[in-house]
Figure 1 (tube, rainbow, N blue to C red):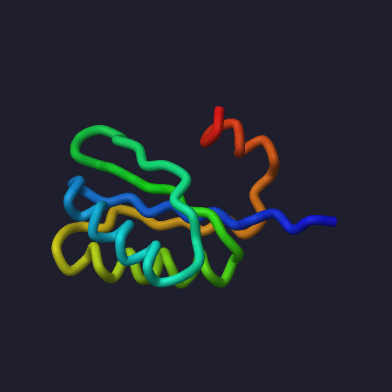
Figure 2: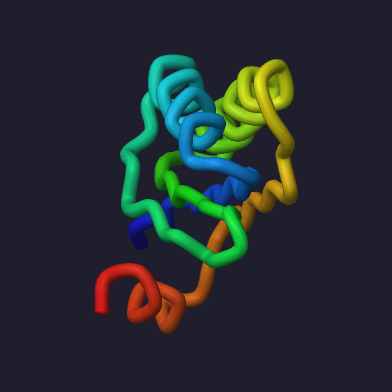
Length: 91
């Protein structure tokens, strides 16, 4: 049985803040950037994927970096998302 990767989402206010967060997150652990989205009203988010520990440390590193230059709106880690969630990101 294969283990489903975890996903992490970090949302910030402002694109520059998001780029800094994504850079820190991806450099901090073995994760893949799945996508980024413009939410609206200046809010942007990115999604990463990897094992649970890597995603958790990546989101923490990204949030710390982003909070130094801007505003972190939310962060979320889903350890074993259901298969139907893949449609949202890869559909």
